[in-house]
Image 1: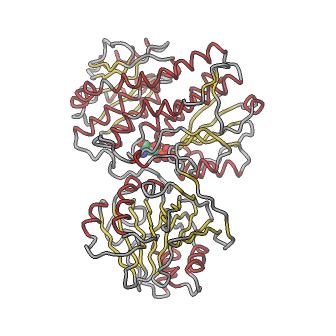
Image 2: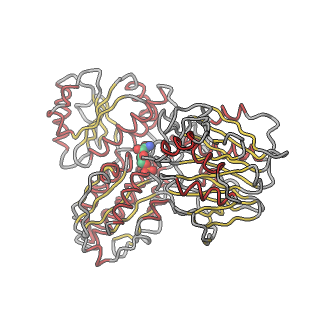
Amino acid sequence: MCGIVGYIGKRDVAPLLLEGLQRLEYRGYDSAGIVIAGKSGGLKAVKAKGRVRELEARVPKRFAGTTGIAHTRWATHGAPSDVNAHPHLDTEGKVAVVHNGIVDNASELRAKLEADGVVFASETDSEVITHLIARSQAASLEEKVREALKVIEGTYGIAVMHADFPDRIVAARNGSPVVLGIGEKEMFVASDVAALISHTRQVVTLDDGEMATLKADDFRTYTTSGTRTTATPETVEWEAASYDMGGHDTYMHKEICEQPDAVDRVLRGRIDDKFSTVHLGGLNLDAREARGIRRVKILGCGTSYHAGMIGASLVEGLARIPADSEPASEFRYRNPVVDPDTLYIAVSQSGETYDVLAAVQELKRKGARVLGVVNVVGSAIARETDGGVYVHAGPEVCVVSTKCFTNTVVAFALLALHLGRIRDLSVADGKRIIEGLRALPEQIQQILAQEEDIKKLAAEYAEAKSMMFIGRVRGYPVALEASLKLKEISYIHAEAYPASELKHGPLALIEPAMPTVAIVPDDSLLEKNRAAMEEIKARSGRILAVAHREQEKADHTILVPKNEDELDPILMGIPLQLLAYHTALALGRDIDKPRNLAKSVTVE
Ligand code: AGP
């Protein structure tokens, strides 16, 4: 959730770290801090509640040094404030720690340390790590950190500096990502490649239980028990420019507009016209195994859970395998029956979401086969699963997901087609779906071309205090996702219901001040959807339909190009991303950084 960046080398460190923090701000943005090794020895720290720009304003002109670590925070323990911001320093100001994750036994450790006379400055769980390191009698910094980590329960990605060891930064990982950036006589450490990609594309991703020592011209990795590990730098494929706004006012707008290219990317090189199927290189599932699958269970959170719902209907529709999607956060706590003939699929754009990762680990422990549908290459979930499909959306910086959602659903369509063609999907149907997939980028472009009209509609609906979203079967997850998007960035309350459930309760909410967005594809349920709109109209409700043809019962219709029935949900969600965007814009919201949210939820 929070962001870490550190540097050791020859360059002036403060501007480098502040730039890194700006790039990481999407991970958490309630406070930030920086510590550097001063030229005359000792550590110098500055912290500030608020955004990175607040921190930048506080950093003094004379803040010179060539080694430092910095952090941008999303509060878990302790409110956002100057003191609760990282880095946390010990009482003597010799040890500085930045931490992502949660120390589960922090209260117990804190009580012990306080009983020994340690005075805490903050309310955070992270500060215990600092004091444990500071109190260690071990000779080396590595050993001090190792001793501290031995008593810590929970998750961490940390970077540590010590005034007595100014030639190094020590990092460690358990459950929260840590990557090392390898440069020419300079090294970086970060929680995310976003922070270092403009300086080096050579990275080493630490595994859980791994530590690293970074010096200006050298690095080494080893386990928390001290055994050396081999770390070969890999080249990051994503371009530094992908993290820029590219002339748009917000990342969200940029990412919505990138969808035709992103979809093109997830399809590229995967379609096999000869057999009307697709090749998915990293699946690690042979045809015999694919034929033996009796159920598919998809697990994800938030938007990824919704993408999984559409994925389940694709798998069920094309491969005729019973499939469903469940919030990973619920699944892992209900002691689920783990069935050897079920294929489990973990969905996560970041590949870091803790609830998804924990569900994967629980499933693996019980011997299940788990695949991943993930955007971030080499992320924790990608590494933990037995195989999977990368969604190739490119970096998504806005906290709310748009292009990753779309690409995830397309990746599911590829997987469903692949499984279908191994099972009972005909060549003709395979061909039909492939043609539909190929049409998507151009059709998305046609939807994006309607932005001005959608903007006008958004201005009209932005005054609503609450909105209803309805859809049936394939349209229902589209409604769920659209309502989540609106809530996340406009803060307008929104409910999503299957249209069929309206008269079982939510119809009571309908009145002129509660507009409804109805998903009305031209499919076998068209008349049923029209009947639901009748019911709303009869109660004086306003309706905005997203449909393939003009809807008489609706006050407004956004027209979407028709694709194959199975693929229609991919297109129907896109105008509603724009609707949420322009509603939030009309209300003056901070679109890329909505209140209380962070991009990757790496804690429970
Ligand atoms: C997306 O708009 C949300 N910010 C959120 O629901 C997100 O999808 C969820 O936290 C899961 O994230 P993941 O895909 O990175 O696992």
